[in-house]
Length: 618
Image 1: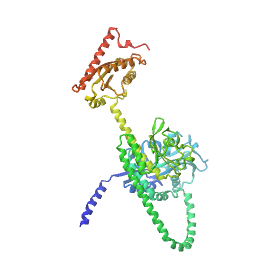
Image 2 (image 1 turned 90 degrees about the horizontal axis):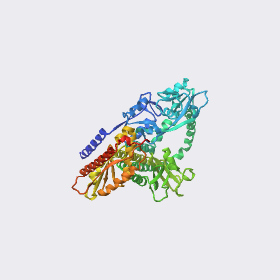
Image 3 (image 1 turned 60 degrees about the vertical axis):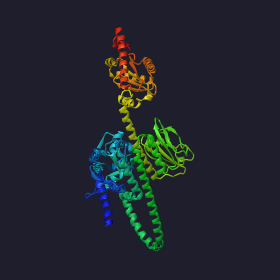
Image 4 (image 1 turned 60 degrees about the horizontal axis):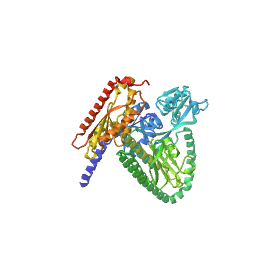
């Protein structure tokens, strides 16, 4: 009875977890074998399908796969109807639109041509009629590089191969092994594939660009599937004999091998009985070691996941730098490291280990760090002495791992022993930098939003909203006396009428810049609205404020880039005690400004001049 009572709450928790688990829908191509397709029985199958199922199990994700026509699947993904794609070639253009996991395969793009024709290379594509899959990576390649205007688009590679086989077009650009698969299955015998590869593309899971949480889980699942050996089994299942010539040769070799193996087995059977116990023991130790390594990898990924959540709450880049160092040293166990961030045309070291010398400032595209930043790809060097681009800051450095952080910078770690870095180290470091990149972009966007909220878009000065917040903060006894300068630009309306608003904007920006440069560093200069400005001066009496006004007026006289003398009218008022309302002082400064403005108007009228007449012939 006690056992049943203890089991009931656990059952309810598991049931709720199941009911409320988020289900994700990933799309794919229904006719893209051997990567993803619908077989004769209507089942979803292929390399990508098997891999996604394995990853979803390892990462504990509830993922449903839907296959359809590629064009429609991509449109559904763009509209948000799908959470991601189980396979998409990675290109710079697509990276600006989508988010991509760690690559799980590589696509080899090749040229197909009709037998009897001369074997082409990449240079032969220019200006020719070329068949490609619509919206596929080769379609993008032709458009981005302006190879030819004669592009024939089809819905699938099979349709393209049949079209090329029938005599249409000069060449076809398709993925090599998939198209060989299609040619064999559909008995297309009059086509050949060129030995020249157009290019290779990383192939990965795709998500929406900013879904870093989902990307993190997919990357985690990929690493676990790869570490367990399941990835290798899936890969060999679909690509072990993708080329049918190799397949036939392997069948023959297998036949001979089976015969030889039968004879050898008879001879070795008695030896096997004596060695079986030792083999079982060795295998058991190997599995135990593998289990320990898997648990160690899981622990690192969990720790990186915790760091990622901390990064999401950072409000300054310095906080992200510290978290990168914490993860690199405590989780990834990198003893020597350097975090270099782009500033202008240089890479500047923001964090580094003190136990080895580093170059604190280098041109951003020089050396291995520059190459990493420029290509956006991780670089592993087992022996820096054999690498021409390597410029080690210390003779102790032997091996190097260099990982990009988007366009923000580069993370590098080194060792004093050659060949120290494994692919696992690179993948974990890439995962860490992916989280850091997301944090940097979030901080950048937050700062941009805050800047726009508190700054005037034309002059770049603080706006009235910021002024009101600042006054509520500094209107205290310790800042007395507080003086205010209220300024109004003279003749802006007439200048706009004579020369247009663009000219008037330049005039206004020049005057605002002159006012800002004439004030002290601690003074707050605000565009109050239209052609009016306010300067807030803490711990400043009226006499000192009048001196600043005089300096502004002197500097305005020096402005000679306009057809009219740059000028403004100024009013000054001072708050001397705590009881006086600040905004009464502000109104007094405004009234004083209007008084000066009326005096200026009277002088102008007494000379019989109007504003347009004061404009010089130039």
